[in-house]
Length: 108
Image 1 (cartoon, helix red, strand yellow):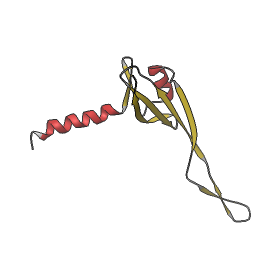
Image 2 (tube, helix red, strand yellow):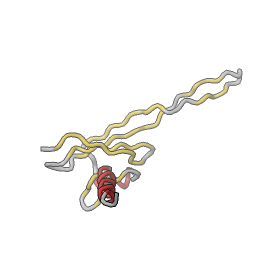
Image 3 (cartoon, helix red, strand yellow):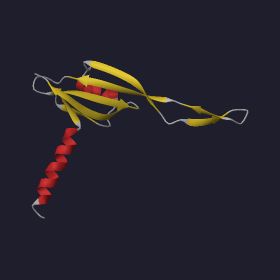
Image 4 (cartoon, one colour):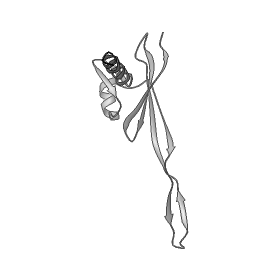
């Protein structure tokens, strides 16, 4: 059991490292604000945004009926091409903060 502790620590470190994008001497991490990412990494090669449906809530009218109001949350996806031999990296922002980092194909 004792020999498993270092292995588990290394595995946990690898998982934490997987959710970053190296930008110069810094890293973009989940939880960072969009302005922080721009400062660390510069402009992405592509930006996309879409409306993610939020939960519907009932709004009573004067007649007593409940009208379902659907709202949406704007989600932005930024794409970075870090350089040859690296993976294309997509950053997803929700509520102005970096929520996830996904990797695409390796750049040749």
